[in-house]
Amino acid sequence: QVQLVESGGGLVQSGGSLTLSCVASGGIARVSAMGWYRQAPGKQRELVATITSRTSTNYADSVKGRFTISINNAKNTMYMQMNNLKPEDTAVYYCYTRGLTTNWVPGEYWGQGTQVTVSS
Image (tube, rainbow, N blue to C red; front, side):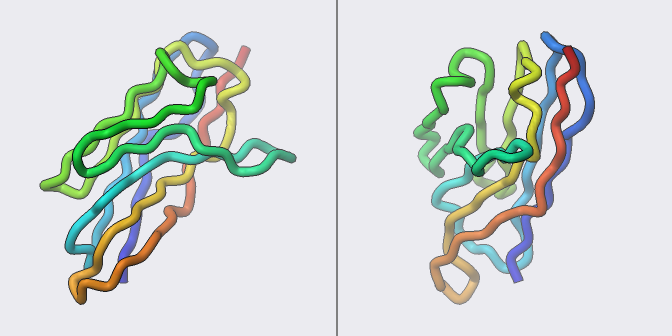
């Protein structure tokens, strides 16, 4: 069973930095894309950034120039460096993965989420 394990969330002051990590394991043979989404209280889940296995990236306008997403295909691991954090970045951040299982079945998977809180 494919599992996504997120880490790196926490509490930081405005202007600070955090690095989120997500590891895909448990039967995933090939990752085609990974990404981060976030959901703030009372708001819908929104895309933050995505990256393909070929390292093509896409960012929400609100994080461009501040967040950097990267991937280690050999380890099925994704990172997101978040700099110059703002209070409006406060949310639960969810890891997303699209890929093939060891049975070559395509699927999409979500992590449990990690809380990022930015104080003003």
